Image (cartoon, rainbow, N blue to C red):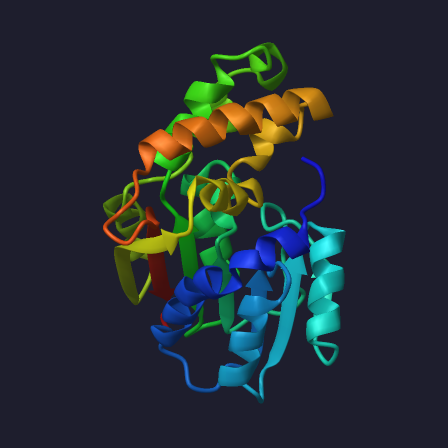
Length: 260
């Protein structure tokens, strides 16, 4: 995919940071020495980690040079490094691996999550939050529009672009990590974000989930796709009693602690 757009991503920063804060609040560590923030993005989650653990060495990792540049500007005292969570391995075993809204982009979770968990120091914690919204109207309509217009051949299989089949059920993550861990906490929360109109919902997902559909398109195809998608979103998210649209956004959380 093309590089990420930090400015577009941060237009809904409060909403995107809320689950990051709730994940951090459930981590059972008092004084970790070394923390990695996988998929740190523009540094909004890294800032929370640094504030909670001011004595820790906190390192942000991302595959996006643009996101890393934004994170360095926000937090010039911290280290931010280009790295891919799929293959990354630290030189020293960390006390906390924190992955907020990144692992859903990667395949083979049955291999990926145990691998990351195995990188921890004794007593360390793997903390993960992933959007679980592929069955929601926002993402179902992406796939429908992708397969129904003149851009369909360019996008290819909507299921592939839409990352269907990558995530496990919450119980699947528990079963995956529980035999390896001293304790595993798994939960699923559905946020409901008030949005001004259909265009605001399109803007939200344009920074994240819509990118695999838009990136292959030329400017004319992209404009046509976005217009058709906004019409579908307008129908799929009718106005509520105050005129706003309510964007349901389920997320899965995992906190797994390694034995000491």
